[in-house]
Amino acid sequence: MARTDKTSKNVLVLDTSAFVAGFDPFSVKEEQYITPMVREEFFKGSLSLTRLKTAIESGRIKVRSPEKEFLEAVKKTATIIGDKHVLSETDLQILALALNLKADGFDIVIVTDDYSIQNVASKMGIQFSSLTTFGIRHVFEWVRYCPACHKKFPKDYKFKNCDACNTELKRKPTLDSKNYRG
Picture 1 (cartoon, rainbow, N blue to C red):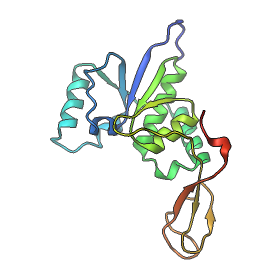
Picture 2 (picture 1 turned 30 degrees about the vertical axis):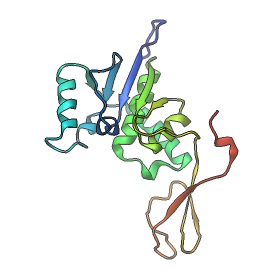
Picture 3 (picture 1 turned 90 degrees about the vertical axis):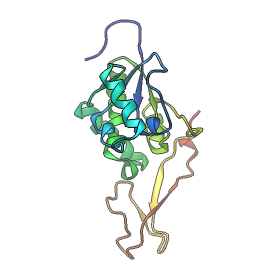
């Protein structure tokens, strides 16, 4: 449901890497969200998991699943630019939740150090903030290839190995300058 008021609220969508980097949910005033899958990525007994549980129990962080249509849109964009095969289901859900909240009228920032999440977010017009890295400077589209026989594969190729020689595939950015951000 889209928001009808004129003021847009700043919202943070938190990736697991934010907590690993030491993000403190009590140090910011913005509303914060995670997906249910983020909780599953923590080691039991870790300080990060304790911080997350405390923030959820106190209401600082809200847990929400994205609507299916937004997950499909993220998968489509990630496939087009060649990042889908390196994104986990949790990563896809983080991006979908951000897109979902953006469609609801919020100003969204994904807090992540994951370059593939940042790349897809940039392509979809979603802001991101990194904690321990500089973050990406350009949006890349990727090409998958076999380093042994040099065969190229489509971005949506589902296997990790070359179908001709069984070597593990690699990826590299295309050199198309239209993909560079601002």
